[in-house]
Structures are given as structure tokens and as C-alpha cells.
Length: 317
Figure 1 (cartoon, rainbow, N blue to C red):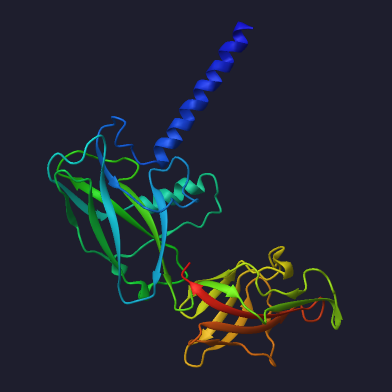
Figure 2 (cartoon, rainbow, N blue to C red; figure 1 turned 60 degrees about the horizontal axis):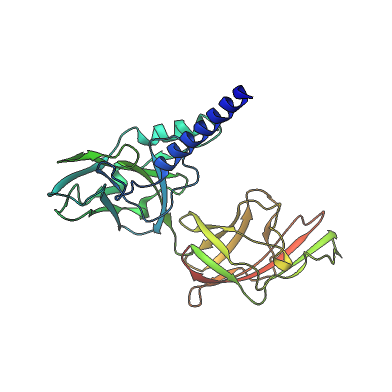
């Protein structure tokens, strides 16, 4: 019995230690718990779920409009029991090798992970390479300009924003460098509501309606998202069958290509090459109302599915 007790106690201690390590990694140091002060980045958004456990670098995702220049604001922070006792000079830069290390950490458990591309220096400018956390304060602003209009939509960029040196205190081991996954959004990117006129019809064979519960009106279904995958291309995510019951399958990577000069739309799906515009239907975008009217079908010669979408912009995603 004594041996069993010892083994159980060891298991409890091990579990507590592991939990503590994970908590330390993903939480900013509590300024009131007596920990020594460190300088770190303080983000107001949650880390990316794909951040590998145990990695020195934490990833965060941000999306901005596709413009010649957009400016992002970040914060360096004194994490510890007291604010800065005196002015602290903080130098900012990009940490070479951080993106590769992040990718390697992820690939250790997932060899198929494609990883990020380190953002080229031609696509960003650190506007505040040196900032000062004033005495009695905890934070200072760091500003970075991104040239999102020049982004290659085929790449997943990560910017390794780093505290390179400080005039006093120590740099945080876990949050002294962060990876910012910055994506560009074209003008159609956003959250859209399913409007009146949205309907889907499923067939068991050409000309034979299935008359099943998944066919019918899809107006009022959950909002969908249009995600930029090119300068004039968005991918539809979150599309569901009638009754808002389940996601539409068999048409992975459903995309809209918009001709900016005429607002004409072409439908396609990387997961199903049969998907195409219905020639007799409307496929266009109304920039005044920010509404897409789309008519397309797929599996035309076997088990056809015919869909009409009227979707209206609600806001940014």
C-alpha cells in the first residue's frame, strides 16, 4: 500500500509541474505576485491555436485591408510587481530565425505542417525602432507599417517582432519575441448574412429532386465568411445546408472570383472541378449594397446540387 501511495503522489506532483509550465508559457507574468520584472510584448488578442506547445515563440493572427500602407500598434510592457522605476529604453527589431524555429517546433509533431514564410523586409517598416517606457508607467507603443497591397496571397507571412535590447530589466524569454501572422484583406473580405432568395436543391439523379431535409431555403442560416485568397478572389467558409443543420460538403475551397471592372463573378471549387456558374443565372456583386447574387451547381451528371446565394456584407471578420 505504501508503494502505491508514493507512485500516486509522484504522479500528482508531475501533473502539477506540467500544468504550471504550460500556464507560465501562455500567460503574461502577474504584476502582483512578486515575480521579477521583465519587458515583454503585451497582446490584446488570444494566441493562435497552432502555436506549438513548448515553443519559445507565440503566434498571433491579424488581418488588414489591402492598402499601400497600414499601421499596426503593439505594446511593450513592464511585467512585474511595480511599474518602471525609471525610464526604460526598449529597442525593437525583427528576430532572424524565429519563424524557422516556430515551424520546426510544429513540424516535430506534425511533419506535414506547411508553416509560415518570414515576412520580407520590403513589406514592412518598424516606425518606432526605439521606444521609452516612462518612469511610473508600464507600457509604450510600438508602431509597424505593413505594405499589405504588395502581399503575395499564396504565402502565409509571419513577422518576428522582437525586443532586441533594453536599458534596464530583463527581456522576457517567452514574450520578448512574438510572431505576427499578418494577412491582407481585399475589398470583399468579411462576414456576410444569408438573405432572402438563398436556396439549395439536391437531386438523387439529373431531374430527380431528393426532396430531403437538406434542400430548401437557406435564408437566415448562420452568417458565412468570405476570406481573401487573392487580390480578386475570396473563399466562402461556413456554408450550410437548409435548416442550418450541417456544413455543405464536397465543394472544398469554394471560391468567388470578382472581375473588378464589371463586378461579374465566377464560381469555382478546388475540391470539385464540376462546380460552375449556371449560365442562365445571375452571378454578380453590387458594390452599392455590398451584396453578392450567385447561382451555381455541381455534380451535374450524377447527383446535381443547385444553389442560389444572396449574401450581404455585415462587417469585418
